[in-house]
Image (cartoon, rainbow, N blue to C red; front, side, top):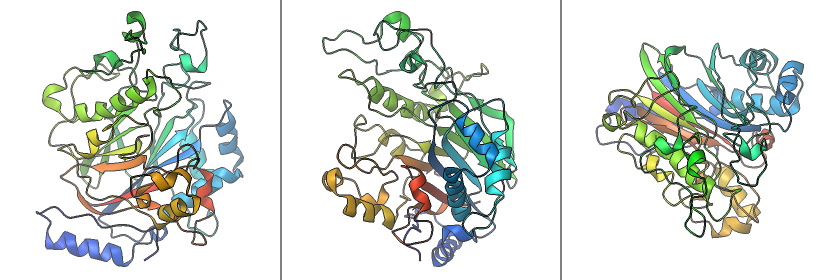
Length: 404
């Protein structure tokens, strides 16, 4: 087994003999790049590809030219892991182009570094809050129109956006977005306060603030005769603020939004961008995917932030994606990694080892009624196939296999 290919979940008590046998088969031939999982296994993946480029139009130009080395590395990773459904974070949103068609035609349909081409006939993308000027002085410095005054930090609209690629149709009529949901409307919202106890955001600003730094999407996938809800988001990192911890508190509440959404009996206050109220019904199958910017043990996020989902009664978080590459990086880079409490094999990001260290930030969290048969982090150790491509991003691709 390749060292980056992990791992079977701790099976629920109700596991069938068939599902156990299937898990064993997957482990015996589990190289992600082969794409040889059984036909009834669906692989989902999430990847922060770090292509939120500094200037508007740069990603569009790279998609059009077809010879952009970072995008070629991204495509190689996708071709090695071969997910059926893929969330790409930090993929700038440009409404003037068909980004998915360009990515397919110029990169994914072309074999990269000896890999087999791959194609995704379906996709979803939409506007995000990053870079959209709020018209308000959100940081209170007396100046308007700065990147920190956008609903989500960004130098232009759509920066750090998201693209979802899928082999399966996406039912747009049954999908929902929550880009405009207001932070103050979340019960028990953690309103930031100054050291003197006064609110960081004045009432007139607090009442207008949007919760999502990018957006929330509930996409209904039509998977082999059944529906699967892909719940995806990319909350703000819990840093780049002051003693009021406005980004840390926002990150925690952005994560809590999905926890609230999974409690439909009390979620009538959640109203989507189309004006429909309520959460996700109890009988719906789902996977929550994305870069959550929160580690369970280390980093700067609010204590217990990601545990709001890891410990949720509707979520099965038993399968913890691992890699030997993450373990190797932590040992070789040392620095702050030495003092981290979390298991380095679970890390999904590779940051400055003096100030941050490597963290587990990227997740795929399935509902309890899904039969999980494997999961992993694509982080090959030095010298293994794909080990050069991963440096395109400071994050690593995470994947999850479910028997459909």
